[in-house]
Image (cartoon, rainbow, N blue to C red; front, side, top):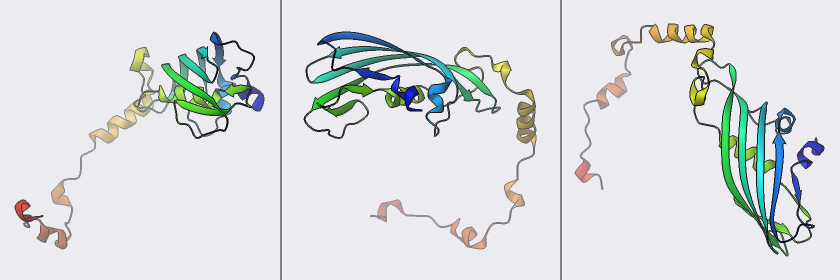
Length: 185
């Protein structure tokens, strides 16, 4: 397990001050390391430009590829293109401090930075909120026709008419009650 995650480590101690470039490939074995995630398959290229300073590392990420997600309409899985650009700043300090999503702090005793978690989170953040066949250049006709027919059947069922339910008499009495908005302070 750790061997796969370790592949996404940048050893910065030996690097001279200046610019450096790294390329990583993300595949199914990468996603298997993150059991809590919804992505299980994908093929992604991660391009990283590193600006090395004496006490800071500036990472510029460019992430592109495809991942497998479930369709929100028919629940069938399909490949969706993703793209992410982001920056990560790593400050090298005497002692480790708490960071946030874009600034990490590491001890000056460290020699490397593992970027696997950042890459994983960036891929997940690049996913659209709604995921369905037909979005972003995929074929809409790829939706599971059996599931779509089931959805149409439930849409065509007559909806409950409000007169067919019995209203609790306690709520019925409140229908006529109005609040005077001027005197509510």
